[in-house]
Length: 392
Image (tube, rainbow, N blue to C red; front, side, top):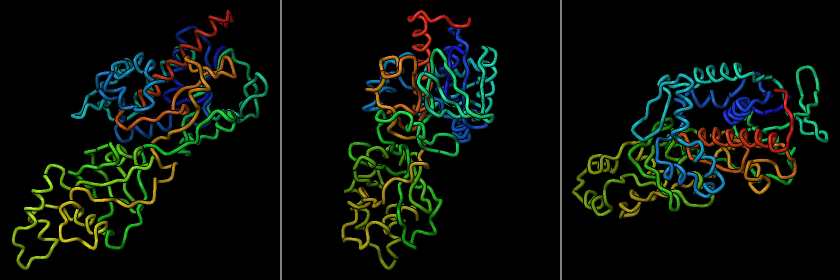
């Protein structure tokens, strides 16, 4: 074969297509019985492909990881992601927040169309082929029929991150790249809270109309109370800052000033309970009142500041395997500008296995596609630059 891709997620399939279009014979090795399992799981909640932002705004969402990703995302950003999906016969729509989805709101039609296109380009997909490192120059692959050793001209590693192990992303590949990875950490995750019995009636309820603060990061998204803590988009948006040490607080009435809250609370209460007083004067829902009681008791005489900045005590992130994505992975300093491993010429890497993270909102899928395209282009160019004859 000319090119071997290890991993059949979005990054791997994009690298495979790019190299096939450059004239290489491409084989994809996927450890699971079917490709792109995490991609399909993401599609069950709507498949947020990208964010329809100007490229500068889109880049800024990656924070400290913008630098190494910038050339890749400028080459394949939000506009290109939409064009790619439409080229696979997917009608798209853009939501009120700029998030872009297929009208069918799932991943399976897009994936079927993509796999058919790859088949038409001559790409071979092997299922239950698990990468087992190298033996000198040869790539070791465990297959249902035993170990095979391959010697492709170029290899693209697209092995995923370290969350959702049952879908194939378990980070086990790091054992084959000793000394070249940063420790994995959960990203876009919930946080564990040991609730009191007082909170039991509110499990499963959404907390809306709030603002979450963690350091300099602010989110106006909502979240859900779960048996083990808090989950949801609003929490994910501030999760990186919390994981890195910032305290979490919630403004239960973000559109009202603290002075206004205080003034409403000083109105005559009569004989009604405090809960009814909070409901009538502030229109606090039962869920918000429950949070206030959970984290602010014993209540001070002046509770207005707590309503505007309620500190949330938690026991750290949910387990990494429950995170939407992960930080950490193959370090940038182990790769050249074309995503080739410095100590293994002809071997490239792409996708979530690289050391970067992105917020939810379409950034993750777009960046996986962009890095896959980048690695595929540079792998094809490497074969040409080194005068290596391929089979076509």
